Amino acid sequence: MISGERIFIVAGAFIALLLQILVVPHMALFGGMAMPNMLVIFVMLVAVSRPGQFGPVLPFVLGLVFDFVGGGPVGVMAFSLTVFSMAVAAIIVRSNNDSAFVALVLLALGLLLVELSYGVFLMLFGYRVDLLGALAYRIVPCFLYDVVVAAVLYPIASRFLQAGGSASLGGFATLR
Image 1 (cartoon, rainbow, N blue to C red):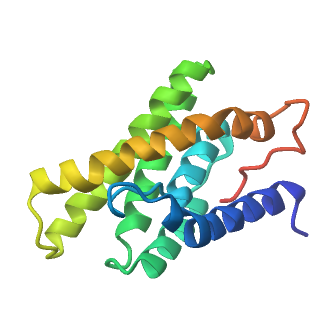
Image 2: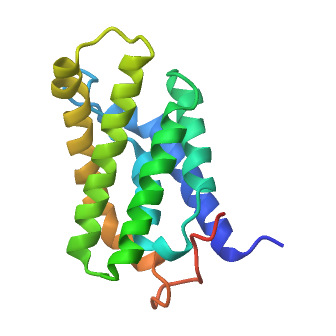
Image 3: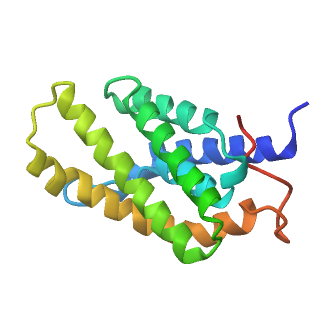
């Protein structure tokens, strides 16, 4: 039987995917260079809000979906998202600090590392762009856009994803 927590996470992932495909292209800034990545934002919000129950399946699957939909090398986003979201969740668990400031800083750090590693991997796989150009025109603007969207969504995610919250439907991020 599929529990309510997994249904909630799957529904959230599906909504993030729909937003990524249908809405995000219309939110592009700087001539289409900067767009938020709703799949990465969703995974990082789950990692920050439920670090103790966070597993590698959600980031890996959503990373693969991004790779297939985005047209880049398959596995690059899956790898980056899995490694860095798991690292953020582990840091939060080990720090034993549940303040919103620490969560937002680690959320921003995770978003930066995913965007940066994705750009570096694309360059390693033969995309013809210099590092400075990639940083200035793609990585930093996308990261800043991701941070703004994630900061707006963080209070909502923490309200619905944290264990024991009054709006909680149970432990949501138990995808393993």
